[in-house]
Structures are given as C-alpha cells and as structure tokens.
Length: 137
Image (cartoon, rainbow, N blue to C red; front, side, top):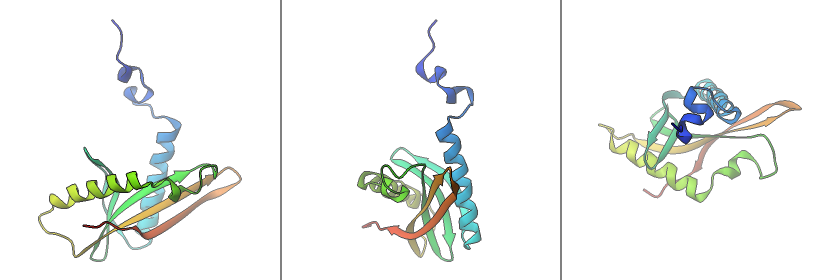
C-alpha cells in the first residue's frame, strides 16, 4: 500500500526541517526580545483558515500582532522585505478573525515585526519594528 505524500514528509514523523527549526528558534528569540521590551506575550502560532499570527502580545493597552521574519542571506533583501502586500493582507485578515472572537475589544491594535538576520560570520541581528504596517479597518 502506497503512503500518502504527507506520511512521507519529514514533518509527518515529528522531525522538523532545518527551516522549521530555524523558524522555531527565531520565534523564541522574538518572544524573548518582546518580553525584555515590556510586552506580555499572550498567544503564539494562532492559525485561522485565512492566515497565521506568529505572536500576539500586549504592550500596555495596545494589542500587538507580531510577525517574525528571518533570513540567512541578503540575496533577496533584508527580512522585512519578505512581507509582501499579499502577506500583509493575510495577517490583517487573521487579526480580524482573532478580534472577532474577543469578548472585549482592545483600546488599540498594532502590527509589529521582529526581524532576524542570521549570518555565519556574526551573531544574529534582531530588530523590533513597532507599527511596521497598518490596516485600514
């Protein structure tokens, strides 16, 4: 009996690809940076059919939807450049879905980005960009 493609993939057996492991590490670094910066992380990897929210956090009264982006090369630009208009739309839609499920709406919302530029010759460069983009609610 033939196995399905999903059963044969490395992640089906619980093993993660190098990219997935790097993403998991990046999210851990982002969480630590947010907490050091005074944020309270309240959720991670929130998935809806319209998209996924990497981290959801509060900074004071502001509810922040935080996208984590990392890169190992400058070939395609810095990590922030990987957030295309399409990606923004997916993040905004996922945030709308999240907000619809809240009993009480936050005073304000914001989209922040944590970028991590991995380089073999030096430590990873991590940056928090508050208000990286806006949504026209």
